[in-house]
Length: 223
Image (cartoon, rainbow, N blue to C red; front, side, top):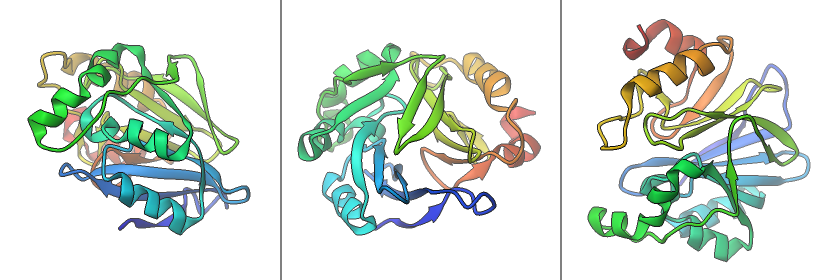
C-alpha cells in the first residue's frame, strides 16, 4: 500500500518521518509527514484513492493536522476535499495562481476518468512564507512553470524537500500545458533549488526520491 515510514535523515536522527502512498492512475506520491514524538503531521497532495490514504494514516499511527497541496493538478489535489471532510482538517496551499485549476477539478476528473471535487484552500501560500507540519518548519518557495502556482516546501533542519512536480530524478515537471512555462521552471530550479547544498533530499510528485546533489550532477535538463 505504501512505502514504510522512514526518518527523513538518518544522520541527524530526526523526529520527522515520512511515508509515500502512490495514488490515482498517475501513481502520484501522496506523502504522509509527521513528527515521530507527537504523531502530529500532514497529508501532502492527496490526489485520490482516499480510502487507501486513510488506511495508511491509521497504519502508521499519525494524527493529521492538515492537508497540504503543492499545486492544483487533479493527481495531486483531486481527493483533498473528500479527505478534508473525512478528517475534519484544513487545506493549506498551493499559491493562489493555481485557483483556476482547483476550481476545475471536477471537469479534470471527467476528462481523466476518475472522480474529483473542486478544492477551496483554507489558506493560500506565497513566497516568502512558512509551512508548519508537526512543529517542523518548511520554507515556502514559489516555483512556477509546471503550473503557475506550484510550490516547493523546504525543511532546512533536516535538509528535506517536498518537491511536487517541479524536479524529479533525472527530469523536470511538464511544461507543455497552455499555461506551462519551461523557462520559468528552469529559472526557479536554478535560482531557488540549486542554491541549496547537495545533501538536501527530496520526495517528488512521482517516482523515486533523489537529492539536490544527484540532480545537479546528472539531470540532463539542468545542463
